[in-house]
Length: 340
Ligand SMILES: Nc1ncnc2c1ncn2[C@@H]1O[C@H](COP(=O)(O)OP(=O)(O)OP(=O)(O)O)[C@@H](O)[C@H]1O
Image 1: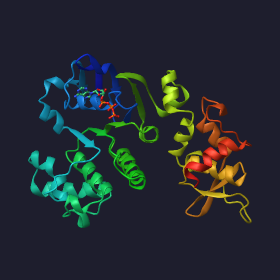
Image 2: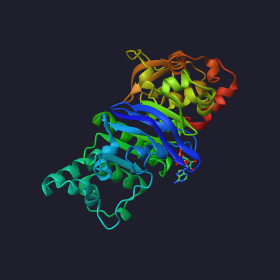
Image 3: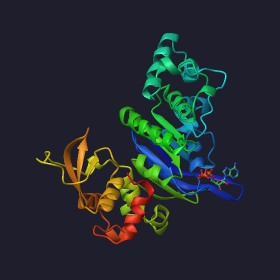
Image 4: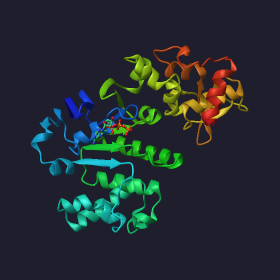
């Protein structure tokens, strides 16, 4: 869908991006990940020509983007940045309506579209339509930014650290909302982030860059279990598997099981709890089996081996240092960050 062919950006005698070739698959979210200064933002901005390449080309739906006028190109691509930059003098509805207005849609269509989009991003139109940006929290403003980026229903969405300026709670909530939206709308999304957790959690694919070049392109699972280089291994760190488990609900690893008769004998966790926290509970409670509940009722069980098999597929316990009957080190590491 979006294809980069030997794309390059040179500044004086240094390359911000060097002969970068990669294809962002249609309908999927690709996280552009890498250390500061590796060329993520430059790559993203070359897709919508906010930055002009010094070499190579970008194909969008097979068409060379140099053949399009930059404004036409940008109108067809949603763009979300860290501080969304809403127009302060316009209310929420007017901000979201900017692009449909530009495209000459009727007033009625636009009003309906604005309400749909506000609902989609989790803002009640009746409450938020007429508010000014100054009356919104950071998370709400960013939601409006998403709505605005989606207003023209672009097939492609570029996002540069879209959750970066939010506090952890607002960030989690908006990431969840966005994941849900992405599942429903199937946009082709390229998201720049330096946050490994975010990339592994939201990315269908991850493109890991280093010094202007691509180190590896693959699924989160590929990067964790089949790192293409020492750089990839070191960048993800030894906690990579735990990070991946943190992004998945325990329901994904559960074996369905009818509620056993009699009093509960195993510790219970809700099916929405993330798998990393479920591991923490096992360590804390000294058990390798948990009962999983849905709306308070037992629906299945999950064992250490299930999480280990899923989390460490293609690897070994040594990858993370997690051991079932284990010494205290992993327990400390697991329990510390987010004991459920
Ligand atoms: N206008 C410019 N002039 C000169 N050098 C630039 C310019 N813009 C970017 N660079 C350089 O290009 C390299 C890549 O920058 P870029 O902003 O793409 O990195 P990044 O991976 O997005 O970094 P970060 O995560 O810190 O935002 C950096 O070394 C940067 O200093």
